Length: 444
Image (cartoon, rainbow, N blue to C red; front, side, top):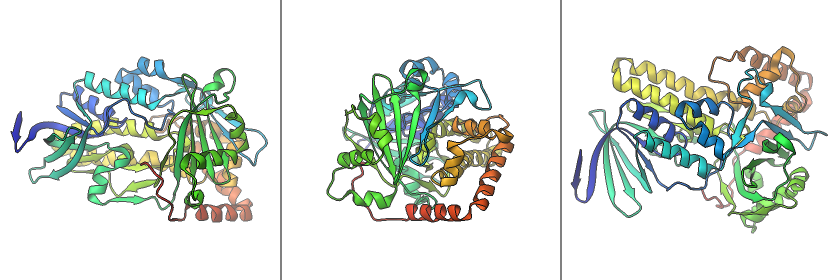
């Protein structure tokens, strides 16, 4: 049903999704397939540039379930593993996904996000989702009758209103609802910024390893090296606020290049490379919201929380939250008596992913943890379990948790046996994550 009053078009739907990225375009088609009228509002028009190009093996079953596996395969660079390069260790360490606990998914993909996200949003349309691109959500009002009215504006100035039974915030780093509710906070346990661009001509490994992501540690943080199809490589510098403050009069492109020069192993692989797009930067890189749901709304993916991308977990957590969100919303709308239990389960699973990845992320710069990564041992099958975490296999039935527990025990024992080194690592980390006022160089 459509009405027009004061030049505002008013419509109704069951579920309105704010954001057409991986979270929004996963929850929407799953709900549409269940018979709900679903509307997606996307502020941009696909294809559009985005970072987060490295996927995990655990993404692949979701692609099969959504019917997009062949499309993703066609645009994806096969990623058999992840390589870590440390200036404090003589040799790099490569983790092959084929060696994880579950051997059935021995690879993932690296994708250009403009192509990948376009596949997702067109799939949503194909499944019956009403998609509005170049349409930005402006306001939401939650009404006493447990519905919500969302006002949005197209880029031509036309305004629309939808009355929805359920609202999904999948707005990514825009954090639409978290900002409205004032529940978004800087993650007190982490604090980093990212500067990134795409290059051609970067030196890749031979054979299958050509598709591996490489993580390069350097003095002020770490770099990602993500090879994609057609000789495009994504390079990003994730660094601490104190180092961002040293940018001075340099533009962010020069700042990125200067950072690369400080990492000889990366500089060597980029010796013949050429930057092919505008360098961008993102601040406030790690944050979390106080809650991820209410009686008739959910926060998915980055709209709820974002953690450091060192393990390439972003797209998986976003898409998995879409799957979890669809299940919770279906229960809330079909079986109201079970809504509280469904939302409680959603909340627990939403926190599970960031929690498991974060334990490693908060410690990966610790020199003792780096030793564990650079010289992995499979005692108590801890290497297999660690690989399963790196593969994103943390939501299924793979029995990794006893071995992950033993990994943590071994790490804490190593800290006890090396108290001075552990203390200096702890002290350095607290120095790194302290809040610092930095110049306004960010695009997002």
